[in-house]
Length: 453
Image (cartoon, rainbow, N blue to C red; front, side, top):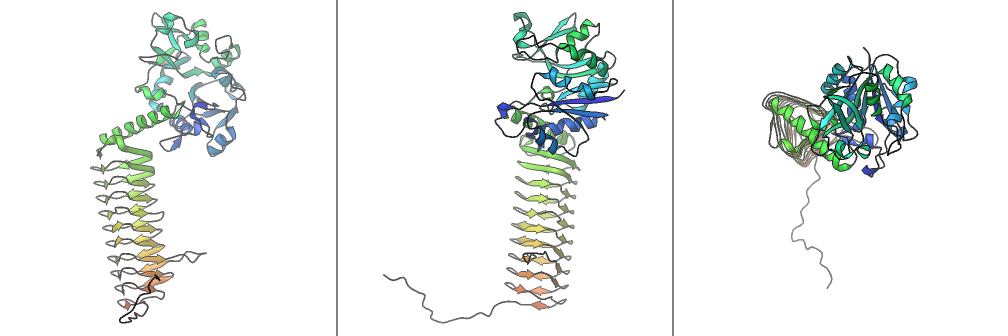
């Protein structure tokens, strides 16, 4: 049976106090709505229908590459009204999951359980037992069977004592949605069309309403303000840390770890506090990441140690490297095995062969550096002429003295030496010594200028 996912994403999110539509607020580095869409894909939904409203143009532009059907809700008349807007494009066969763009963390496993429970009955929902149900719709049961959902403002005192609440997440036969939704009424305290009324309609038709509860309560929590957004962020990150600890990762403090993408790990990986992982990253066996590091779309091979406050972006790092502290690997950085990159060294679009060392205050841009070459402190490759980028090539076992400037395009040969403080503008032959310094002038008994009294 085909599955459609309907996502309600038309709300303004006034309490966020933001110009950004609520469903575009970031959680773990991605918009709230992106999490819901990703879950729908995991369920292999045949169609994803997203209902948009406030900031709709921006929302659609953000997800322009996604294969979805967009439906506009021009008036905010309740959840029932929102789903009514879908009927002209909704198939009459199959089943629909009704989700929310501001409820980002419901898992595919939970939704699959809901699908499995609902298909035999034609309707099902996720409920949750909470200590304080104030403000939520109550699940009214008779002999343990769901009879209705009563909104808090419409509930009697007895009904308000019920602790089982409606999460708003449903699985319903498309045929029944076409049958029930046109008959919704707005005769209630809010003057809105409640989607919850389809439960009473199902009972009236003699259908049993299936229900499940999520494994984790945060799966069904929504975002209405920044306090709730922050709470969900931490819940998400805690689950990620728990997963990786089970994979063998040691965290100095799992409460101070942020994953904003995907991560693959080997054995015995160690991650210190306040590390941020973005994009798609991979850490090999025995990798150590120091405190305050940021890794984005980076692959680090086994037994490399990254010292504190280093930043990697689209880098590939070999085995047994020692990098940092305060190092920066920019896009296109490819480091072989046993490379040392020290404090305040920046590498961009460069290939460093095995055993290269650049331990202090150096910039290597658009460079190819041969095996076992040593780069002295303060060295820079002058790769940009204001219009074009140029390549620097340094051979194997070369020695570049401190405070040198290599003006690209240029080649420094195998075993060559560049004297400290040199500006090198011509190619250097293999095993040659290149000196490019100004002549030192010394004036004895020099009197410095004095300020007038």
